[in-house]
Length: 169
Image (cartoon, rainbow, N blue to C red):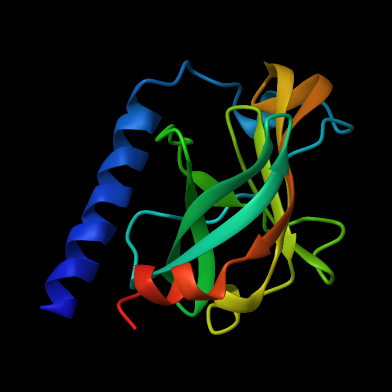
């Protein structure tokens, strides 16, 4: 039964990633980018091995709010996350930034101008790692955030009881 749930969740994440990729505009090939153009190296999410869910309580402009995260794991690494706010709004799949310059201290995820940053965590420690911030860029240029960043959630603390329920424990 648990395996079926994991497979169903993995398929949902993979399908969402594929449909999201299908709707993208063509981007410049790397060969066409100038040498000083920053490039985000994002994790491969063509398939997932398992998922881990985490419930957070975060500060927002509307006060304390709950935020749930479903992390996708591939080859022993966290590869993707999708966040769900208390109002039911879902983020697109945010892929792990593999070349984060602060990667020794944090995990970063990115897509479509949204950036989610958490404390450093492995798949085994995700359920105890706090979230730092979810930001939305004013604009996206060549796939990269541009302009000011609006803070949507910050200081996200793991809700251990809700996290256990999400993971069926």
